[in-house]
Amino acid sequence: MLRFVCAVVGILMTFAAGAGAQEGRSPLSDQADARMQLGAASLIPTLRGRRLYADQKLVVGYVRDVKVSKDGNTLIVVVARRRWLGGGEIAIPVPLLRQQDNDLTITATRQSIRQIPLFPP
Image (cartoon, rainbow, N blue to C red):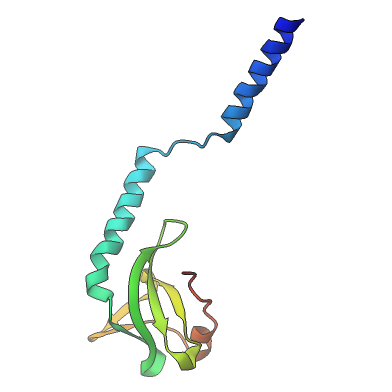
C-alpha cells in the first residue's frame, strides 16, 4: 500500500512540475524577435527627434523612440504628443507613417489624435 501511495505521489508531482513549465521558444521566433529589434534600432537615428505632422500641417509632436509592439509583430514610434492635443506619449505603428517632402506625416484629424490612448511607460 505504501508503494502505491508513493507511486501516485510521484506521478502527481511529475504532472505538477510539467504544468508549471513554460514552453521553450523556437529558434524561428527568436530570429523574428531579433529582426524586429534590429529594425527598431535601425530606425531610431532616422526618426528620433523629428516632428510628426497630421492632416493640414497639424503638428502632432516629436518622435521620442522606436520600439517593438507588445505582440512583437509591429514597429511603433513613441510620440510626445503636444499638450493641446492631450499631451503624454502615444504609440503609432510605423506602417501608418508617410514621408511627404521632408516631413514625417500621418493621416489623422485633430479629434482622432486626441483619442489615441497614452503609451504605457
